[in-house]
Length: 292
Image 1 (cartoon, rainbow, N blue to C red):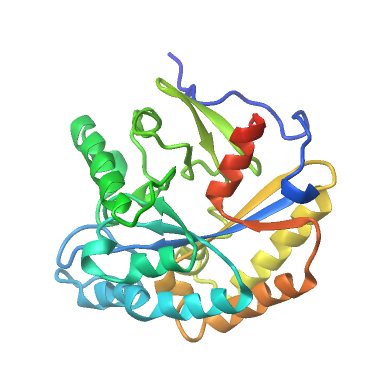
Image 2: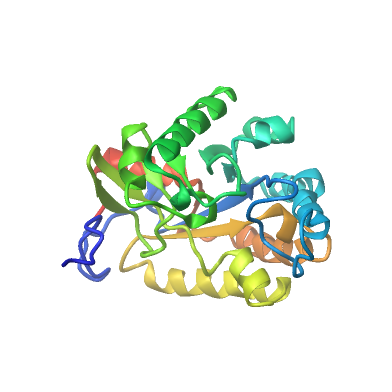
Protein backbone atom coordinates (compact mmCIF):
# COMPACT_ATOMS: atom_id res chain seq x y z
CA UNK A 1 0.00 0.00 0.00
CA UNK A 2 1.41 3.40 -1.00
CA UNK A 3 1.38 6.17 1.56
CA UNK A 4 2.64 8.80 -0.88
CA UNK A 5 0.40 11.70 -1.86
CA UNK A 6 1.33 11.52 -5.60
CA UNK A 7 1.01 15.31 -5.89
CA UNK A 8 4.71 15.90 -6.69
CA UNK A 9 7.82 13.79 -7.17
CA UNK A 10 11.04 14.15 -5.21
CA UNK A 11 13.56 16.43 -6.90
CA UNK A 12 16.33 18.03 -4.82
CA UNK A 13 16.75 21.77 -5.13
CA UNK A 14 20.31 21.33 -6.46
CA UNK A 15 18.98 19.47 -9.54
CA UNK A 16 16.59 21.93 -11.16
CA UNK A 17 16.61 24.50 -13.97
CA UNK A 18 18.15 27.87 -13.10
CA UNK A 19 16.20 31.00 -13.98
CA UNK A 20 15.69 34.61 -12.90
CA UNK A 21 12.79 36.54 -11.48
CA UNK A 22 11.79 39.66 -13.45
CA UNK A 23 14.60 42.17 -13.89
CA UNK A 24 17.26 39.54 -13.23
CA UNK A 25 16.39 39.34 -9.54
CA UNK A 26 16.94 36.13 -7.62
CA UNK A 27 15.03 36.21 -4.32
CA UNK A 28 11.28 36.83 -4.42
CA UNK A 29 9.85 38.08 -1.11
CA UNK A 30 6.16 38.56 -0.44
CA UNK A 31 4.09 39.33 2.64
CA UNK A 32 1.12 37.02 3.15
CA UNK A 33 -1.25 38.88 5.50
CA UNK A 34 -4.04 36.76 6.97
CA UNK A 35 -7.32 38.65 7.41
CA UNK A 36 -9.45 36.20 9.38
CA UNK A 37 -12.78 35.97 11.15
CA UNK A 38 -14.04 33.48 13.72
CA UNK A 39 -17.33 32.37 15.27
CA UNK A 40 -18.41 33.75 18.62
CA UNK A 41 -19.16 30.92 21.00
CA UNK A 42 -17.93 28.00 18.90
CA UNK A 43 -15.38 26.80 16.40
CA UNK A 44 -11.61 26.93 16.07
CA UNK A 45 -9.35 29.87 16.86
CA UNK A 46 -5.82 30.61 18.03
CA UNK A 47 -5.58 31.18 21.77
CA UNK A 48 -3.66 33.79 23.71
CA UNK A 49 -4.62 32.00 26.94
CA UNK A 50 -6.50 28.76 27.69
CA UNK A 51 -10.23 29.08 27.04
CA UNK A 52 -12.51 28.95 30.06
CA UNK A 53 -15.46 27.57 28.12
CA UNK A 54 -17.73 29.24 25.58
CA UNK A 55 -18.28 31.97 24.79
CA UNK A 56 -14.51 32.45 24.87
CA UNK A 57 -14.59 36.23 25.09
CA UNK A 58 -10.89 36.64 25.87
CA UNK A 59 -9.56 34.86 22.79
CA UNK A 60 -12.35 35.91 20.43
CA UNK A 61 -11.83 39.60 21.25
CA UNK A 62 -8.03 39.25 21.02
CA UNK A 63 -8.37 37.90 17.49
CA UNK A 64 -10.94 40.54 16.54
CA UNK A 65 -8.44 43.26 17.51
CA UNK A 66 -6.57 42.42 14.32
CA UNK A 67 -9.48 43.39 12.11
CA UNK A 68 -10.49 46.48 14.09
CA UNK A 69 -7.01 47.92 14.81
CA UNK A 70 -4.04 45.73 13.88
CA UNK A 71 -4.70 45.54 10.16
CA UNK A 72 -4.93 49.31 9.87
CA UNK A 73 -1.67 49.74 11.81
CA UNK A 74 0.02 47.36 9.37
CA UNK A 75 -1.50 49.20 6.40
CA UNK A 76 0.22 52.37 7.64
CA UNK A 77 3.54 50.52 7.81
CA UNK A 78 3.16 48.95 4.38
CA UNK A 79 2.11 52.26 2.86
CA UNK A 80 5.19 53.97 4.28
CA UNK A 81 7.45 51.26 2.86
CA UNK A 82 5.52 51.11 -0.44
CA UNK A 83 4.85 47.40 -0.04
CA UNK A 84 1.96 45.57 -1.64
CA UNK A 85 0.93 42.38 0.11
CA UNK A 86 -0.94 39.22 -0.68
CA UNK A 87 -4.14 39.69 1.33
CA UNK A 88 -5.30 36.24 2.41
CA UNK A 89 -8.98 36.87 2.97
CA UNK A 90 -11.60 34.79 4.70
CA UNK A 91 -14.64 35.53 2.53
CA UNK A 92 -16.76 36.29 5.59
CA UNK A 93 -14.53 39.32 6.22
CA UNK A 94 -16.66 41.11 3.61
CA UNK A 95 -19.79 40.64 5.74
CA UNK A 96 -18.37 40.93 9.25
CA UNK A 97 -15.73 43.64 8.74
CA UNK A 98 -17.12 46.00 6.07
CA UNK A 99 -14.40 48.07 4.47
CA UNK A 100 -11.45 45.85 5.44
CA UNK A 101 -11.29 43.75 2.28
CA UNK A 102 -12.01 46.85 0.21
CA UNK A 103 -9.06 48.61 1.86
CA UNK A 104 -6.79 45.72 0.83
CA UNK A 105 -8.04 45.98 -2.73
CA UNK A 106 -7.79 49.76 -2.86
CA UNK A 107 -4.19 49.84 -1.65
CA UNK A 108 -3.26 47.46 -4.47
CA UNK A 109 -2.86 44.24 -2.52
CA UNK A 110 -3.35 40.95 -4.30
CA UNK A 111 -6.62 39.36 -3.18
CA UNK A 112 -6.19 35.65 -2.45
CA UNK A 113 -8.77 33.28 -0.96
CA UNK A 114 -8.44 31.92 2.57
CA UNK A 115 -11.67 29.94 2.86
CA UNK A 116 -14.90 31.23 4.36
CA UNK A 117 -13.71 31.70 7.96
CA UNK A 118 -11.04 30.30 10.26
CA UNK A 119 -13.58 28.71 12.56
CA UNK A 120 -13.44 25.37 10.71
CA UNK A 121 -10.54 23.39 9.25
CA UNK A 122 -11.05 22.73 5.55
CA UNK A 123 -9.88 19.12 5.74
CA UNK A 124 -12.79 18.25 8.03
CA UNK A 125 -15.40 19.07 5.37
CA UNK A 126 -17.13 16.43 3.30
CA UNK A 127 -16.72 16.30 -0.46
CA UNK A 128 -19.85 18.29 -1.33
CA UNK A 129 -19.37 20.73 1.51
CA UNK A 130 -15.79 21.51 0.53
CA UNK A 131 -16.64 21.98 -3.14
CA UNK A 132 -19.56 24.24 -2.24
CA UNK A 133 -17.40 26.27 0.14
CA UNK A 134 -14.73 26.88 -2.52
CA UNK A 135 -17.40 27.98 -5.00
CA UNK A 136 -19.03 30.33 -2.46
CA UNK A 137 -15.74 31.87 -1.42
CA UNK A 138 -14.70 32.46 -5.03
CA UNK A 139 -18.03 34.10 -5.84
CA UNK A 140 -18.02 36.24 -2.70
CA UNK A 141 -14.49 37.58 -3.25
CA UNK A 142 -15.36 38.35 -6.87
CA UNK A 143 -17.61 41.07 -5.44
CA UNK A 144 -14.39 43.03 -4.87
CA UNK A 145 -13.98 43.21 -8.63
CA UNK A 146 -11.16 40.66 -8.79
CA UNK A 147 -11.13 36.92 -9.26
CA UNK A 148 -8.75 35.26 -6.80
CA UNK A 149 -6.20 32.89 -8.35
CA UNK A 150 -4.53 31.77 -5.11
CA UNK A 151 -5.76 29.76 -2.12
CA UNK A 152 -4.63 29.22 1.45
CA UNK A 153 -6.70 26.69 3.35
CA UNK A 154 -8.02 27.66 6.78
CA UNK A 155 -5.59 26.14 9.29
CA UNK A 156 -3.45 24.94 6.35
CA UNK A 157 -5.88 22.05 6.25
CA UNK A 158 -6.66 19.98 3.15
CA UNK A 159 -8.66 16.90 2.32
CA UNK A 160 -7.26 14.36 -0.12
CA UNK A 161 -9.27 16.06 -2.88
CA UNK A 162 -8.48 19.73 -2.15
CA UNK A 163 -5.91 20.33 -4.95
CA UNK A 164 -8.30 18.71 -7.46
CA UNK A 165 -11.16 20.95 -6.34
CA UNK A 166 -9.03 24.09 -6.46
CA UNK A 167 -7.84 23.34 -9.99
CA UNK A 168 -11.41 22.57 -11.07
CA UNK A 169 -12.56 25.96 -9.76
CA UNK A 170 -9.86 27.81 -11.70
CA UNK A 171 -7.23 28.42 -9.03
CA UNK A 172 -3.66 28.72 -10.31
CA UNK A 173 -1.76 28.30 -7.07
CA UNK A 174 -2.04 27.10 -3.48
CA UNK A 175 0.01 28.08 -0.40
CA UNK A 176 -0.68 25.08 1.85
CA UNK A 177 2.41 23.02 1.03
CA UNK A 178 5.50 24.28 2.88
CA UNK A 179 7.83 21.74 1.29
CA UNK A 180 10.18 23.91 -0.80
CA UNK A 181 11.88 27.26 -1.39
CA UNK A 182 10.82 27.30 -5.05
CA UNK A 183 7.45 27.07 -6.79
CA UNK A 184 6.62 23.47 -7.67
CA UNK A 185 3.82 21.93 -9.66
CA UNK A 186 1.21 19.72 -8.01
CA UNK A 187 -0.58 17.08 -10.05
CA UNK A 188 -4.38 17.23 -10.02
CA UNK A 189 -7.22 15.64 -11.93
CA UNK A 190 -7.82 18.97 -13.65
CA UNK A 191 -4.29 19.95 -14.73
CA UNK A 192 -1.37 21.44 -12.90
CA UNK A 193 -1.63 23.60 -9.79
CA UNK A 194 1.35 25.60 -8.58
CA UNK A 195 2.52 25.37 -5.00
CA UNK A 196 4.01 28.73 -4.01
CA UNK A 197 6.22 28.68 -0.88
CA UNK A 198 4.47 30.00 2.23
CA UNK A 199 6.61 29.60 5.31
CA UNK A 200 5.46 27.83 8.43
CA UNK A 201 8.69 29.00 10.10
CA UNK A 202 8.73 32.69 9.14
CA UNK A 203 5.15 32.83 10.35
CA UNK A 204 4.04 34.73 13.43
CA UNK A 205 1.53 32.14 14.71
CA UNK A 206 4.00 29.24 15.12
CA UNK A 207 6.73 31.62 16.28
CA UNK A 208 4.78 33.65 18.82
CA UNK A 209 1.71 31.60 19.77
CA UNK A 210 3.19 28.09 19.62
CA UNK A 211 6.84 28.72 20.56
CA UNK A 212 6.22 31.70 22.85
CA UNK A 213 8.84 33.83 21.16
CA UNK A 214 8.41 37.57 20.83
CA UNK A 215 8.55 40.20 18.12
CA UNK A 216 12.29 40.89 18.28
CA UNK A 217 13.02 37.18 17.87
CA UNK A 218 10.57 36.94 15.00
CA UNK A 219 12.19 39.96 13.33
CA UNK A 220 15.60 38.32 13.80
CA UNK A 221 14.24 35.20 12.11
CA UNK A 222 13.19 37.27 9.10
CA UNK A 223 16.60 38.94 8.99
CA UNK A 224 18.45 35.61 9.20
CA UNK A 225 16.25 33.91 6.60
CA UNK A 226 16.78 36.71 4.08
CA UNK A 227 20.55 36.68 4.66
CA UNK A 228 20.75 32.91 4.17
CA UNK A 229 18.60 32.90 1.04
CA UNK A 230 20.61 35.77 -0.45
CA UNK A 231 23.78 33.73 0.13
CA UNK A 232 22.26 30.94 -2.00
CA UNK A 233 20.41 32.85 -4.69
CA UNK A 234 23.35 33.14 -7.09
CA UNK A 235 22.95 29.37 -7.55
CA UNK A 236 19.15 29.18 -7.72
CA UNK A 237 16.08 31.44 -7.66
CA UNK A 238 14.27 31.36 -4.33
CA UNK A 239 11.05 32.50 -2.63
CA UNK A 240 10.39 33.70 0.90
CA UNK A 241 6.79 34.17 2.00
CA UNK A 242 6.52 36.07 5.30
CA UNK A 243 3.25 35.10 7.01
CA UNK A 244 1.60 37.72 9.22
CA UNK A 245 -1.61 37.99 11.25
CA UNK A 246 -2.83 41.47 12.24
CA UNK A 247 -3.98 40.29 15.68
CA UNK A 248 -0.39 39.23 16.38
CA UNK A 249 2.05 41.54 14.57
CA UNK A 250 -0.46 44.38 14.53
CA UNK A 251 -0.21 44.70 18.32
CA UNK A 252 1.43 48.01 19.34
CA UNK A 253 4.35 46.33 21.13
CA UNK A 254 5.14 44.08 18.12
CA UNK A 255 4.72 46.29 15.06
CA UNK A 256 7.90 48.33 15.79
CA UNK A 257 10.14 45.23 15.51
CA UNK A 258 8.51 44.26 12.22
CA UNK A 259 8.85 47.86 11.02
CA UNK A 260 12.56 47.91 11.82
CA UNK A 261 13.44 44.75 9.91
CA UNK A 262 11.29 45.59 6.88
CA UNK A 263 12.69 49.13 6.81
CA UNK A 264 16.24 47.76 6.94
CA UNK A 265 15.54 45.44 4.04
CA UNK A 266 13.81 48.10 1.96
CA UNK A 267 16.49 50.73 2.58
CA UNK A 268 19.26 48.25 1.67
CA UNK A 269 17.64 48.13 -1.79
CA UNK A 270 19.40 44.88 -2.66
CA UNK A 271 19.15 44.43 -6.44
CA UNK A 272 18.73 40.68 -6.01
CA UNK A 273 15.41 41.03 -4.12
CA UNK A 274 12.06 41.16 -5.91
CA UNK A 275 9.39 42.51 -3.55
CA UNK A 276 6.24 41.03 -4.98
CA UNK A 277 3.06 39.04 -4.35
CA UNK A 278 2.38 35.32 -4.41
CA UNK A 279 0.17 35.81 -7.47
CA UNK A 280 2.91 37.63 -9.40
CA UNK A 281 5.31 34.79 -8.61
CA UNK A 282 2.79 32.26 -9.90
CA UNK A 283 2.13 34.32 -13.04
CA UNK A 284 5.84 34.58 -13.85
CA UNK A 285 6.36 30.84 -13.37
CA UNK A 286 3.34 29.98 -15.50
CA UNK A 287 4.21 32.40 -18.28
CA UNK A 288 7.71 30.96 -18.58
CA UNK A 289 6.92 27.30 -17.73
CA UNK A 290 9.48 27.30 -14.90
CA UNK A 291 8.03 25.09 -12.16
CA UNK A 292 9.84 21.90 -11.23
